[in-house]
Every structure is written in C-alpha cells, then in structure tokens.
Length: 467
Image (spheres, rainbow, N blue to C red):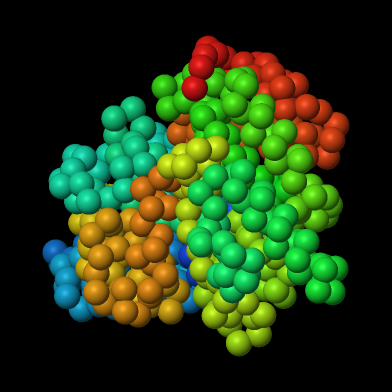
C-alpha cells in the first residue's frame, strides 16, 4: 500500500512539473461550490500541492484499497472527506484514500489523461465533468455491467444520455448545474409585470421598460439584461440556449449530424446582437460569469443569465438584490421552448483499476439518493440529479431554491461533447469564436452559422442536416 501511495504521489508531482513547464492552460473551474461558476475560464494555474485526506486503514488480508482523486481544496473537498470517513467506518473490507486533486478542471483532466496513457492502476475513482464522457469513455468502466440501470432510472434523462457513449454508461450522475434566468421580483412588481418572461420577446420588452424607468429615476448604470458574451466556453453555453430555445438545434446532433446551419439558429444569434447597447451593456462581450454577477449583485440589472452558484451569493449580506430576486427557467422563442445548458459532475471508474467492482460499489453509493440529499444540504449545496429529491421536504425547507430548479433541469440541453469527442474543445472553439464575431458586429448570424458548418465539416467529417 505504501508503494502504491508513493507511486500516486510521483504521478501527481510529475504532472505538476509538466504543467509548470507549459504554463498550465485555460482553466474551467468545477461547479462544485457555490462560489465557482460552472463554465467560467479562470486564470491559468498549475496543480496545487496534493494532499491526502481521510487515509484508509493499513493494508490487511482481504481488504481492498481504493484511491479516489477528488476536487481541489474548498467546501466540496471537506464534504468528500466526511463521506470517505463514513464509508471507511461502514466498509472495513473496502477502504478508500482520498487525494486532493487540481483546482482547475482543465488540469484535472490532464492528470487523468496522463494516468490513462500509462494505463496506471493508481487511480480507481474520479470526478468527471459533464463535457468529458466522450473524451474519456475508452478508459472508463461501463456501469451497466455493475447494476447501474436501476440506479440511474431516477436521474434526469438528459444527463444519463450525456454520460452514455456507444451504449456504455461511463459516468454516474452526481450533481448537476444549468443556466438560469435571475430576475428582480421588486422591479417586476414596480413596473406592473405579473411574472418573469416566458419568451425572448417578453424579456426584451420587460428589460427595456425597467431599464428606461430606473434610468429616468437617476440610475444611469442600470441595464435590462446581463449574460456571458466573452469568447470562451461560457459563450458556447449561452449561445446554445439561445439557439436551442429558438428551434435551432444543438450545433451537432447526438447522432453526429452537423445541424447548426439553419434560419432559427441564425436568427437567435442576430437577436442576441440586437441586445448589445440596447438592453445589455456594450461591455457584455467581455463578460464571464463573475462580471455579469457583479453588475447584478450591485443592483444594476433587471435580469441575469447565470448558474445556480449565484443564487446563494445574491442572498449575501453585501448584495444589493438580497430578498428582491428569484430565478426561473430561461425564455424561449415561444412559451415552453426554454433551454438550459447542462452542467455538472459525474463519477467515473478507471478501467485500469485493480478492483473495478469495489470501485463501482463506492461510485453507486456516492451517487445514491441518500448521499445526493446529504450533499444538497451540505454547505456546498450541490444540486441533485435525482428527480425525487426536488420534492423532498427537508430540501424544500433548508434549500427552498432547489425545488424551483426542477423545470430548468427537465429542459436541460447537453453540449455536443459526447458526439464530437475527442474534438469537443475544438468544436466549441469554432462555435464560440464565430458567435463572438456576430456579437461584435463583424458577421451576420447567417454567415456565422454557415461558417461554423464548414469549419465543423473540416474538423469532424460529419454529414450536415436539419436540427
């Protein structure tokens, strides 16, 4: 066991050195703790010094020892330490060692890929971002071979589909995330609106009315609608919501057809361009999640598109909108056409594990209804993937915003990461780069979707078709 631990530490140290040599890379923080937005690109970083937590019992005859690379330091890591301690106490025959992983999700997948390339047995269980199943599938076990069909029957179908690659379930849904529309309840009431907008037309009209009124009262910094317009993964999320909720499809379909070049998708992008300088600040094309949230947090926006992490922060003592807002599903071109880009994390087990059955047993426990409820009620407030928990009375009492999110996750749309693997990053870059050209007035929506189609044909070699 000591040799295995030292080998694991060696792998982590080598990985940190490689990162330092190449300068890291654009990071995508996990949506684990409320303070971390789901799709935000953070400052490039190298892997932190790795720490061991909740050490397993010494090796003994008949005892299986598992290694789990967990999240980076923070509220979620503390939660995982508690889980490991409970598991180890209840399962003397399967003991788990939790290792603190890199903070950056980009660095974390780099660690996994390095271990997989070496077919290392040093990692048994790991956390998988929602956009990774396709990229990592060949290195992960199929949970359907370990009795997972019944376990995932109560999960959001979109997440199960996202985690299924060529019929293999390579990730168990663990906690989720999705785009939300935040709105000022006090201002909707002030200006005579009965509720939040169901369509983009209604949002535009409400945002303009409230913005005009607030500016007339002296707040020249007030805007109707803030969102994420910088050229990064977050723009892929926002633009996918605009397009899908307008009937324009998912860029690339689940069956590997490029569907982006259509009139509805072009019109959705042109619509978003029309917001800039009118109901959205000109600087929105440089906004990531936190830039949007700061405008909202200061009381200077009627509506905001963001992730669930912003809910708790908006209720903070320093927030100008505390007690004056709520969140709901994003609008669509027509009522009922809402779309929320799917975020969140899964549990995966390495196919190189010496003990895949034991690791699968641990993964099924971690993602169970009972453990998802516990992590929903923990300080990190992780959003469940189990539908039944949205009617749980304890969650409704202690986390009243969570049940309100059920319509968001039932209408969640996955990014085409599984269909385009292992080239999703390049696919997303092609998409958001051309969307950014529309938002900055250098390209029309029609030209953008045509260009994206051509570029994706060159990149992926897929056929083209209608959404």
